Image 1 (cartoon, rainbow, N blue to C red):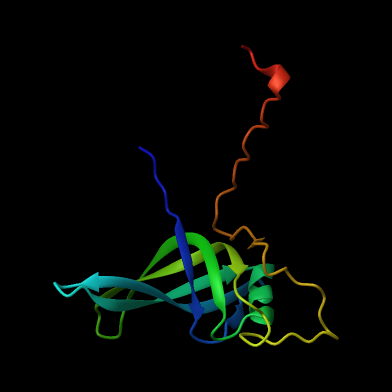
Image 2 (spheres, one colour):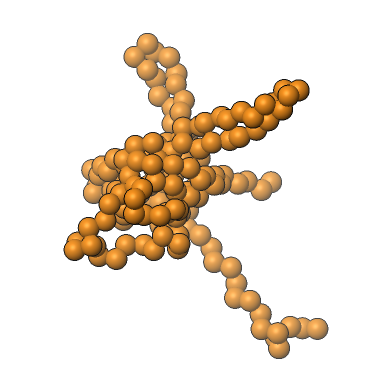
Length: 157
């Protein structure tokens, strides 16, 4: 049986990213995104909008990049996987929450005027807004690369 845990989101940050470090020194950025879904309901086909608030975790150097270049209101594309966390609250109730662990992300929209302000004096480059920045999360399994495509002359028929 094939299995797939893949999440694709486009939304806006509802607050500035929070950057923390694990005891081993790995950077972790926590993001909160608002993702809208618009639909028509009822006989009058009244337009309705549903907003989901989703927590996203970014690890490693990408977490530092997110903290440096993103701010509340900035639009972002995230590709990742869904992770479930379980714990027992103070009332001894079992609780479950879901979080997206980002594997890749891409800044969308304009960087100036919305979102983080960049300091041109201290800017070391950073990712271009139209190219995705990728990283491998610490828990992510190693990816297998596809075999090279056969040249037209190498085909057996």
